[in-house]
Amino acid sequence: MEDTTYLEVFDRLKKAAGVTSDQELAVSLGLSKQSIADAKSRKTVPPAWIPKAAKLFHVSTDWLFFGTSEGEKPAPISTLGCDVNLIMIPMVDARLSAGQGSLQTDGNSERSYAFRSDFLYRKGNPASMVLMRVEGDSMQPEIMNNDVVLIDQSKTEIRLGRIFAVGFEEAIYLKRIDMLPGKIVLKSANPAYPPVELDIRDQQRDAFRVIGQVLWSGREY
Image (cartoon, rainbow, N blue to C red; front, side, top):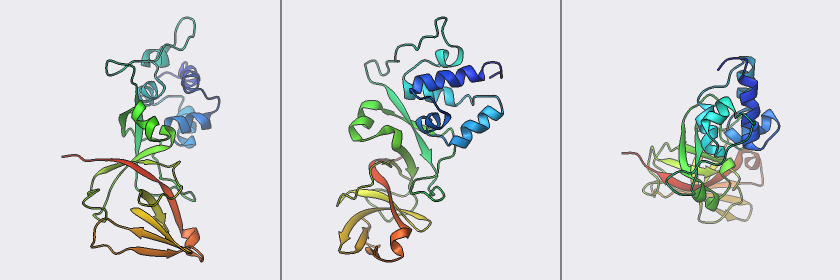
């Protein structure tokens, strides 16, 4: 994309997202703020952002690329032959963002998967959702090694019996969470892994954080 038009495309991306700042746009697209700054320093808009934004904000790629004669935002795109739209959810690496209780996203990653918007809104907040590929067998047979899970990072309130992505020190686990007085109990589905008790009254309190609730899992064959 030529540098004569890249700022106009950024303006249309913000208009489609209903935001006014680069930081808000980054959050809406599931990117880091630095990725926006890097793109602007190169005077370009990465092509992979356009179809992602089109599906996420329900606008056409032609409008995002070229605009319209009146500068109007076009009508939402209808997909699947009905009034259901798709939202692209980014795949993240299984590591924590530095100093935060959230998963690390790669601003240059083009990995994302489409979900029906009505499904996502029924489950939670799509803007806070990410996908993560599972490593390990501690939640087998419910969640297998190499499965993909959908996590809502806005759902951090512990609900007994539900599966959460949790961080302890620098590691990430999928566990069911129980609570005892002054303690958190992390439970695996695989009986080979005994429950782990964390005393949240001492230094372990700062080392433990709930990242988000697991809403869905999928498997490739």
